[in-house]
Image (cartoon, rainbow, N blue to C red; front, side, top):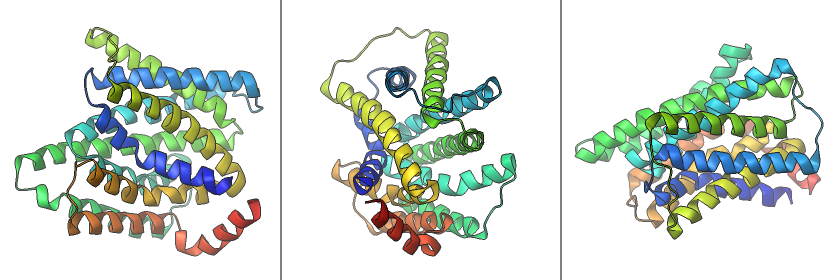
Amino acid sequence: MTIFMYIFCLIVWGLNFIAVKIQGTPVSLELSLTYRLVMTAFLFLILICFLRPRGMPTKKDILFIMNFGICNFALSYLCLYYATILSSAAIVTLIFSLKVILTPIALRIFLKEKLHSRVLVGGILGVLGVCILIYPNLNNFQGFNDIKGIMVAILGTLLTAIGDASSARNASHKVNPIYANAIGFTVGSIVMGGIVLFQGEKVTFPTSFSYVGMLLYLTLFASFVAWFFYLKLVEKIGGARSGYMVALFPVIGGIASVLIGESNPSAYLFIGCFSSCIGAAIALGFRTQKQESKLTLKRVN
């Protein structure tokens, strides 16, 4: 079961931005994201009613949980949505994998945690991978869109890292992540709903198969089931080993981008994804803990 949950999270999250690309923009990205967040918040609230888990947050925890929800689910998602439309899902997936470098930096800044030298080495390889991937597009118009998308994706990943720091703080104070997710998605949906109202957009719901199908995928699988499985993985094999899947996101996103015709198979795509994967693996300390991880996976199964 552990291996199944691991592979499920890897594939579902690796295809996140491909789903956003397929969903498209029949309505604004803000409205699409609001639908996703509202539905996910509702699912987590139902889960709380059924499980009634321990670790309910206190008043002192609420601000940190709100920051987690706003950064990780509202603003970060919105930036990554825009980045996916501006550039390619492969590029955005590649940049998002840099969170394994940016999150330790955020933990160092906000929580004073130790920053390992491997994060710097992994970061250099990750940035190199992004540069290799976008190099062929720098001399055409699409390249400018790619650059704008990259900048927005970097901002979204930075926001995710800040939210991760809040999440780490919540975990250290024994806040159950199911409560944190329920509150976080609720706060995120309120923020996004406020943005939609501020824009004065007419609220409509597209009924095309691609839109509804991808919305259900992003809500049910990517935001709810995958998160629930991930929390179980953290319980069984630890947060560090669970995070190894991020190192493979560029491969999943790159292959899917080629399959849907968004990207062309090339040496640049292969080398860029490979460099990013290696960088993420180094930043996570994959080499030093690989054997221990295998033993743990065998034991829990």
